[in-house]
Length: 427
Image (cartoon, rainbow, N blue to C red; front, side, top):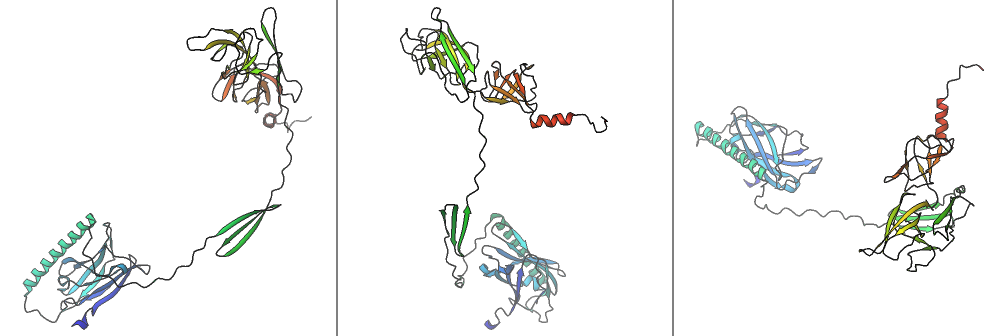
């Protein structure tokens, strides 16, 4: 009977989850005769069923029996499997509702849409079993089927679908040779008017010329920076130092002139030397208020001038002997800032020339000091800082003194908006 092998199998393709299957037929007279040869695909591409369990779920309407049966893999890599209708399902004439369920290695389950298996009438009787024995056998088969289904669900929960190794599949056909790869190249060549870019890829060579941009307009000359000219003298009889400082002067001047020695890093030990000017790393901040600093190299004398790290000029008023830390303590009085004036921004400042602001304003800027400028764009007021204010990280709080009023665009716009409506007024 080998020539009848697979004769009763019906070929079916399950392509996409909601694709319809069936109807199919079964017969009580068959034993491993009729069944289903199933291919699982997605959009025409076979689904690899390696490591998956494929199960038939069935329920007999008339016999009121139900059960499960496993498909046998035939070519799992190409989604092929088969099943012969189980004897318990095909034992009674009638209609069977069925589904195919696939459980993968992660425990995910996908089932087909329900389909129908018509169990035909059998004309041949089985003399070896009476009706009661047949029913008992069916009930036992259904119980076995339920146990098998429970086993499948437990295995799915564990992720355990490692069965025995199947027989080696047939060698696959050789695939088509891939196209040779291609590494593109690019180069840039400078020219008199710009550059030429050349790109070569598998489609050919592409060249693009890039011209230099047009030369921009020449900017307006910047305003001359303010400078400080300072003259320091020492009264020969009293030894009292005095400093004359003039802000402004001849445009373009950038030289700081003193009537005695030039800038130095540290004093020497000669007590009879003339007063000098020295650079130090400290920062005094407040003009007019006494400050102190310590020196480890040399000793400054009364009448010496020091310039701190913020370009603040100060005069030494007293000095102490070497202390236990190996340092000399000095008291100084900051006089003026010798750097070019800076400008900071504020809001709401509106004072006339020579008039001092009522209250203080926060002026945005870095280390602003006495003589620096303050500008309020909303009012057009330009003012100066008359005395050192309180510092924060990025602003100084002070009471500026007005220099002049500038008609800025925002000021003019506000002034126009504030004019009365004169459209109905006759002149």
